Image 1 (spheres, rainbow over the protein chains, first blue to last red):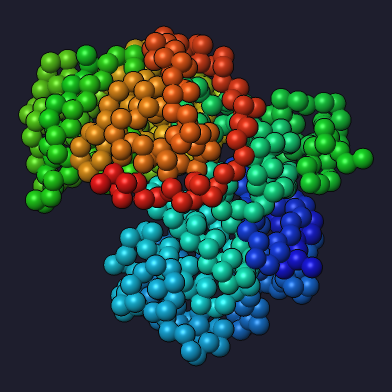
Image 2: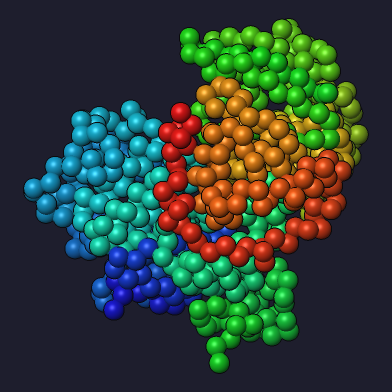
Length: 302
Length: 316
C-alpha cells in the first residue's frame, strides 16, 4: 500500500475567453513511505499543477488522488484534518511571511501537528541553521537560508509526505544540491515520502530513488533512477538525458530536441510526443499509448 | 586580440570584488568563465560594459582593439555599449521589456547606433530573427515577449544583442533559466553565430557541462581571481589547480569519476585532439553530438554525494 496514489488524474485550468487548458491529462503515480520520487519534465508540462492538485490547492477535474487510502479534499477556508502532506514552494521569497519572525512561522507548523515538546529552534538546527535565528525576519536571510526555513516549517507539521515544487530553482547554483540533499535526508530520516519536482535532471538524479518523466500532462516513463539514467526507454527521456552537456572537455554540443512543447490547450492527436519524436511510427499519430511504465508504442507491454 | 582585460580590480564599498583579473577574448572564439557564485564572474562581464553598481571603483585596464574602456567618458562608452560590445542576460523574462513589441526592442538601438531608417531597421530585424531561428520572423516582429516561450525569448535576447553587429558578446548565464532541451538549442545557436560572424564571446556560467560544450578557452575564477586558464580540453580533463579539480569533483556526473581516481592518463589521447580541433571544428562538433547513447555510467551518487558542494575546503 503506497502512501500516495495518483490515479488517472486530470486537472484543467479554465479562464474566461480562453480554451480550457488540460494541464494534467491522465497522470498516474505512486509514492511509498520513505521513498523519494523525482518528477522531471520541461517547463509547462504540468509538473507544478500535479503537485498542487496533490495538496488540494487545485481542483481536480477527473481521476483521483488518495493519501493513505483517503481521497484528498480541496483546500478551503475551514480547518483541515489532512496535515500529513506538506509542501515546500518554489520561491522562498514569496512563500515566507515577511512580517513575522521565522520562529513563529515554524511554530505554526508545530501547532498543526499538536507538538508541544519541540521548539522552533530545534527545527532550525535540523536544517543546519543556528538556533538563535528563530527571532529574525525572513529578509535577514539569503535565498538558500530562506528555503531551509521553509523546509523547517514544512517539517514542523510532521508530514508523512513532503512535496517540493521546484524547491531549488530559485536558489543560487551552489546552494541547489545542498538544499536538495537536505530535503532528501530529512524526509527519509523521518520516514516520510518525498515527491521532488524539478527540471534539473542532475539534481534529481542525486536524490531520487525513482524518476517519473512528464511530458505535456502525462507521465511517459517511470523507473528506478539508476535504470532510467543508464537505459532510458522512452524517446523523450532519451532526448532529455541526451541534452545534458557533459563536462568532459571534448567540446561536444548536446543533442537538440527539435521543436517546442506544443500548446497544452491543443495537444497533438495520438501520442503527445509524436511531432517531436525521432522514432515516430504510424500508430503514434493515431492512438495514444496509455500504459506504463513506458508510455510508448515501442515499449508496449505484451 | 579583440578584448584584453589586464589586472582588473573592482572595489565596491571598500570590499575587493575583483583582485586582478586577466582575460583575453579573441574573435571567433568562445571564452568560458567558470566559478561558484560570488567569485566575480558576473562583475567581470559588467565591468567591460561599465555597468557596475554605483560607488564601485575600478583599476587596471580593459582594452577593446587597443582602446581603453575603463576611462572612456560616458558618451563614448554609450557608443560601445550595445554597439561594439553587447550582452545577453540570464533571464529573458526580465531582460526584455514586457510592454514593447520585440520589433521595437530590436530596432531601437539599431536606429540609434547605426543610424538606420525605420524600414531598413525592420528589414534587418526580420533578418536577425530568422538568423536566430524564430519561426515566422515577419509575424514575430510585431509580437510581445509574453507570446514567446522561454527558449524563444532567449533567442530574441540574443538577436537584440547581435543587432548592431558587435565584436564582443558577453553572455551571462544565458541558459541557466532554460530547460535542458532548450538549452541545447541556444548553445548550438551561440556556437554557430560565433563561428559564422567571428564574434568574441565571453560565456559566464557555473555549469561546467555547458562550458565543455561550447567554450574554446576556459578560465576558472575564485574569490575575484582567475586561478586557472587554458584550452577547454586541458582545463576540464587535466585541471592543474586544486580548485578546478574540486569543482569538477563536485559534479554529480559519474563519467568523470574513473578519470579522477583510477587512471588519470587514460583521457590524454582524446584531449590532444580536442585541443587541436578547437576553433574551426564547429561543423564536426555538431556531427558527433549524439551523445545520449554513450551515457553508460550509472548513478554513482554515493561518491558524488560525498564530494559535492564543498570545493572550498579542498582548495585550501
